[in-house]
Length: 215
Image (tube, rainbow, N blue to C red; front, side, top):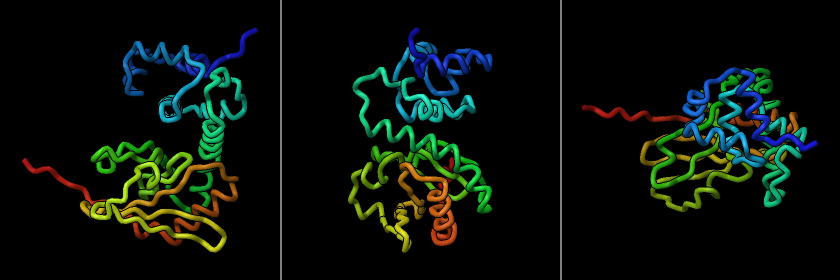
């Protein structure tokens, strides 16, 4: 008996929820034919899987963490990719409850910020939109962006005595400030300590200046 693949697991959930394929394609920002391609995959991009998880309200990262064979058929997958899947699964498993417990809104979205996409600057993967707290999977945003343009960005790292580290990133053009945290594997206690540190020491620094295009 062949092992189920991640694509087959996604298809099963789509059929179970009785999604129209065209509407599902629109929801995950792809063409209808690409959906059928996804159903046949034995490996999948992390950002795409995150978007599918959001649309279907099902944590496929948790499925992968519990059953790595869903995507292990791809012999080219790196150890880092496996670690990232495990980290994201843990994040979505514990973060909503942690945010509620420490008195923060637990709304989590996938960042579509236009501002941080200017000049091909990569965006963080996940954001707490009510606080401008962002998460990049497996790496710092500053390393991903590989930018040292001090005329646009100012980056300050804040650290706690017990090793928690977050980046405060200011866009000098728009006068906006976001917090970036590396999304790597952390225990629930470690994530809670991180978010308490952010709430108590960093959130008051964030701000977003909205630009209104006048006719």
